[in-house]
Length: 375
Image 1: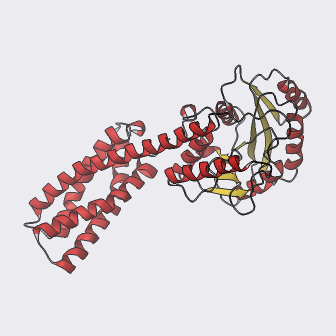
Image 2: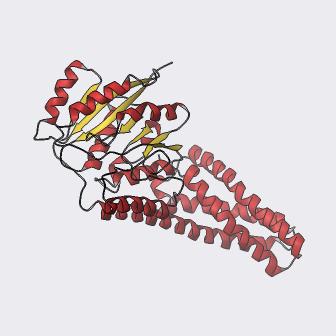
Image 3: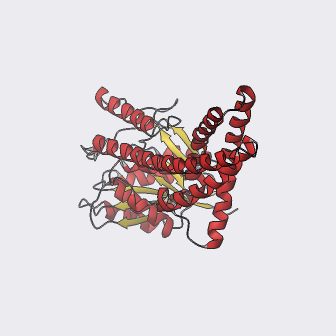
């Protein structure tokens, strides 16, 4: 069986007091990793004036699995991570990429267990402080613990991701097949908050995300690089992501309204000669055609389907298949409603509206996850 290449990406700036110990501890942990994985270390140094890069070069002379990538200037933790992730995928051929800190706060001993979760079927494994078995540093003051806990709570609440407990964790391993689908050059932050955007992007792609309990340890050597504006930057990222999703949903609603007008018009034209279920089914198909064209040109223009006949036909067929769920929903609502309450103009049109509203939730979910999923 072919080994999967795993790259531990470590951004550094003035980490000469920590980097050699961190690398050696990683190499020790690698000995406990399953043979199905080939382990590498990539240090992304922001041209540290303290000579961090020189230490990495020296270590790389004896260990071929140690790589160094230099940044000409310091642009932020997120920028360094993104550059490292892209290098790991494009130059080193990584199948999996870890985000890992050099300061000792992330413990190498967790890596074998996190990779074991990958072997069991996870696409992303996040080192979590907030699930049973995990913890925050005991020496943190109550103020920092409150900021961390409620920061996670706000992120999960605003982004509707309550299934996850630690969305601000910086210790994570991800399959590159998902990372390659994300526009890494346009994440909303170049600082710590990049991890929230990346986490949410992986979630939106449908990656199976598993949280793994870790004890987070505060650095013991060197100066903390926690930026003063981190809280505000994180809030900006979280609310911007929610606004983007809300705007798209509102556009789907507008397109849905246009489709509803078409559906109501055709339904009322046909209901005089056909059963309400059949009349509504035909009307829905006309609405589907309109929805597909308008959504492609407007709502999902950033992921627009190319105007090639074969591509459009294939996607439209898929769109119709997805819309079958909405048709079934609306058919069922109409069938149950007319049999329980009888037939009348107001009732039947009311049932059409109820079916449209329920189907809207189904449609939006399928549009974003399947039809216009970002590449």
